[in-house]
Length: 329
Image (cartoon, rainbow, N blue to C red; front, side, top):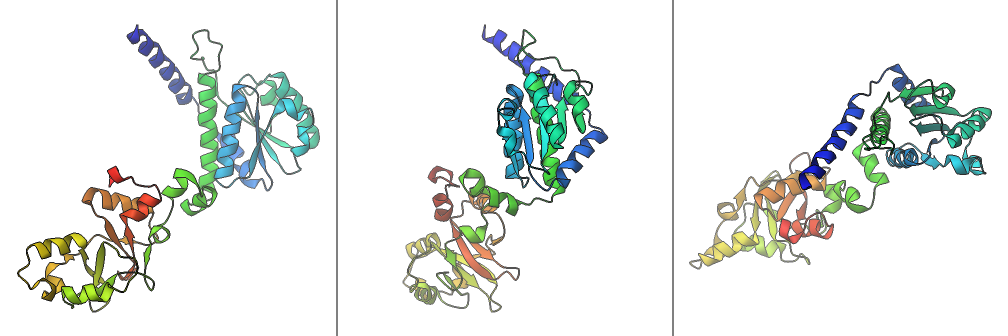
């Protein structure tokens, strides 16, 4: 029986993938993108039933990628919600049949208001297709439902086409990772877009443990002893102030274990880790993780364009941001 389940489920996946694969974009898609880019008000999305859920998702995607948007429920629209539509707005309407009563009723009012409409529908000859300023066709789609009735492959195709429209607009607006971070300050997405300079807790001029590589181990330890919050490592710099090495608590423990009484008098150059991994302050904190995790590094120097230290990002900084867990360190 389990094999029968999987066999049918695979048929569903294949049918939905085929529905997306059959979509062929032409200059009508280009015109739809141009309409959205030219809109200086809000891009509303609308649809009824399952298509309405797809429309809600597109509206959320638009809003999070720099295009002001909200969802317009067609059933509620004809009972007063059309008051939320303003001159200059644009409406993207989803309906595979293009004949839903709620959609047709709201279209007539939108036409009276002079609101531009983009239709995403099965056929340009449907009522929705004929009314719209631009119609992007999905083409004929066989639903994955065994009865051929429940929206499945058609809504998957709508979802994919909506994503294609939204992300093309996003790309055309030159929407950057910094812009994305502005709209996603919370949650895992926001954390992934935090810059190293924002995540690091050890900073130049404040509490950064940095010393000359011309000193002895004892002199280095004395020089950074005044820092209130201790780091697990000291950054060593050459005569030009560039990073030349790093000396960690682990290095100190190993040195003392093998000590013959002269550990603190040894030149730091002889016992430091030379040419350590480092990262720029404007890089993403997630990139710091990609360096620290495989090399099992707990501290990573943060440098400027001259390779001079401006900070130190500690594994604890990333754990506090919930970007790493203790087991993942």
